[in-house]
Length: 136
Image 1 (cartoon, rainbow, N blue to C red):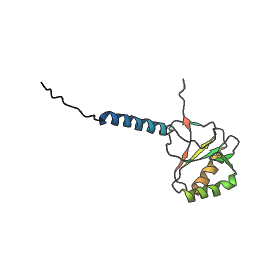
Image 2: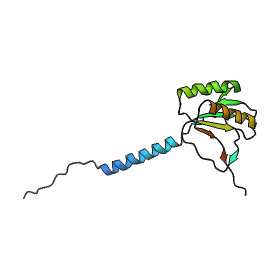
Image 3: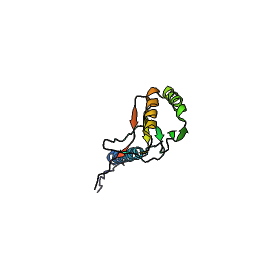
Image 4: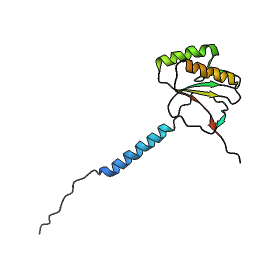
């Protein structure tokens, strides 16, 4: 007596493969979002209640406690700041600017930097602050 046995061919199941590819995609998206490049120098920021997180890459103008001005961690003299900003504006017209000032920085220096950023033609200007801590 002869038995007829069905022979099965090997199949590649796509559903588990799609699940793994989706998980890898999610992993890479989260890892890329956590790699934020901060171009400023560390200063003690003032606190504010309405702070928001900036996710786009921007130029950072930092004002330290002594009134020194830095453009992406590079020291810049106050008279040279406007010409440097105009050069950046000419190469990247849609570039955003973040002004990061030390909490004890002279207010005149902060206003002067803001005025030069605006005069250079930048319209996407943000002031950096840290979230206000709740009083316990």
